[in-house]
Length: 239
Image 1 (cartoon, helix red, strand yellow):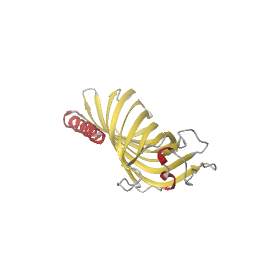
Image 2: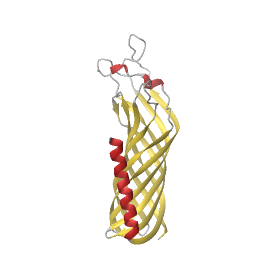
Image 3: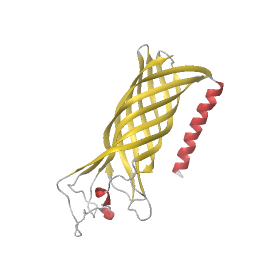
């Protein structure tokens, strides 16, 4: 049900963008640049694992093509090609839900490509714009690593003592390297004679699981859930 609602929202945004493109004032503005920021990630495990946010870097290339102005709305496509570190950081409890000194963090390094339909309002050339954007995001895992404390509390069965006996994740490598989801966010863009300065926040809801999710597998869901805070600088190539 959640996936259907998110897909409907994405489709509506894309249709609105295409509608604007049919009847608006044409634009043909292309700009490129770079972006940098942080990714605050958790993995939606089912059964659940208690986590704090895993904070990692993200940076890469940005491209924006503005095609139309419809009344006061500027319609554009915005895309990025990024390196991004995701993962999860556990808040480890024992089988009686008491905190343990054990620590565990999984780092997962991705190449990501988000593609947005973008709607903006405000100053076109000199001044501030507010924007909303939404679209799909695709990722490919290129490496992973684990940070684990030397102390490791074991139960009577010789396995890590954890609530609900959920301890399989420590020895599991990512099985699905291709990642995808739906992402959207809000931001501000300052347009100046020397370029475009962007500050934004966005959220990505993962639709793909990192582990297999058949009935015989330990997790029925294991998808990334990410909050991004990013800055970007773009300069005009065609205006």
